[in-house]
Image (cartoon, rainbow, N blue to C red):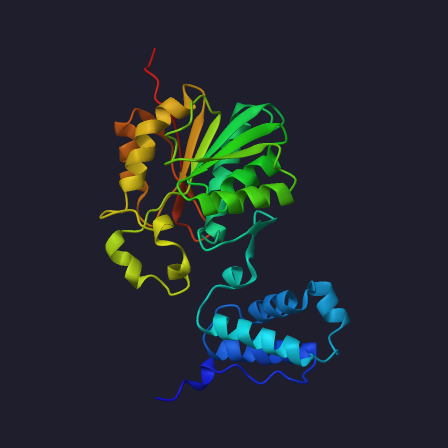
Amino acid sequence: MAEPASLHVPPLRAMTIAAVRRELSHAFRSAGLDSPELDARLLVGHALGLDHTALVVVADRPLDESQAITLAALAARRLAREPVARIVGSKEFWGLNLRIADATLVPRPETETVVEAALAAIDDGGSRTRSLRVADLGTGSGALLLALLSELPNAVGVGTDVSLPALQTARASAKELGLGSRAMFVNCDFGKALAGDFDLVVSNPPYIVSGEIAALPEEVRHDPRLALDGGADGLVCYRTIAADAGRLIGLAGHFVVELGYGQDAAVAALMKAAGLEPMRARADLAGIPRALTARVATMPP
């Protein structure tokens, strides 16, 4: 059977950089990709080692044969629905450029809602410049931890993960962002190896129902299953984290977790059962409850 025309990479030899961007944008749009112009710009810039400004300055320069071959290979991967972040090995999150690897999720915009909720909890307790201890359980790329450390100048933090390659990726990003001296990384299951008394604990745990993973969009299915699979009901990891949260945050700390679609009531119930007091979930830009904050419940006077 012939391959659909929309999946063909257009010939790129002898084209100018501007023309290549137009051709790839057209091919990506024909294939139904969501952001064809942006994808084309990022891939061309990555292949040629040029930022956005440089791409404009040298727009009339033709590709050489080696560049055309390299870019055609990258475009073919994108047409096969491999996310751009995985192709170029990095993703922007909270204004930070983070490394992405096979062992990490690609950070998504809705996860920034967790950062917003965490910072709001910190702001309620005083200045962001005070000394703070932060933990990110299941840190993956380090997105949550590094975003928070970038906003809390005197905080120190620890990210945990069961995946050593994920921790190596997060550690490399921390160093590149100048946050390496304030971030450490520990190989363990969520908070099992941590002593506690954190001012803030955050987590974006696996929360997809096991039976629904095969039906996820193809780009999402490029993420490691270990970082997606939340068990038969999607709540397995929340049970583990909630059971340990009180020990980790003590009486004064805050606990913030990302939620999957429609999970706010179930996760809040798990927190209450574990002796925590959940607040109203913070919604993302689509209006979906995305970040739930909790503290250790206190007895009324």
